[in-house]
Picture 1 (cartoon, helix red, strand yellow):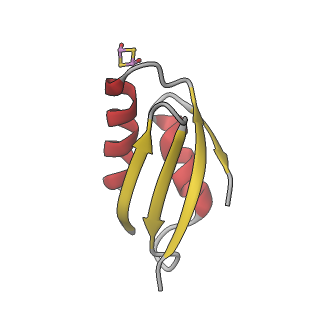
Picture 2: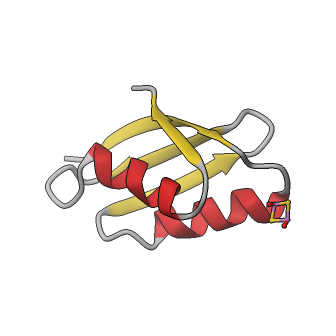
Picture 3: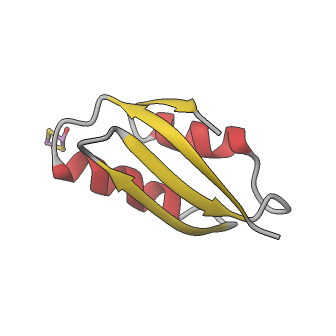
Length: 72
Ligand code: 9UX
């Protein structure tokens, strides 16, 4: 089964920022679909909990250089 979460992402100031977050998320094994809304400072991530934990998503965003807070 897949699961969808939203993550608040802080520190993105341009479209290249949001693209790099999106790429980092889509590169994670277990992510089915990731999209980042720059103006809303939010990422939507559809993923497989059997392959990936919430914290892995948070860590991937932080490794890309931004702050991440899991919303739901
Ligand atoms: Mo351009 Mo966004 O350096 O950080 S990618 S502002």
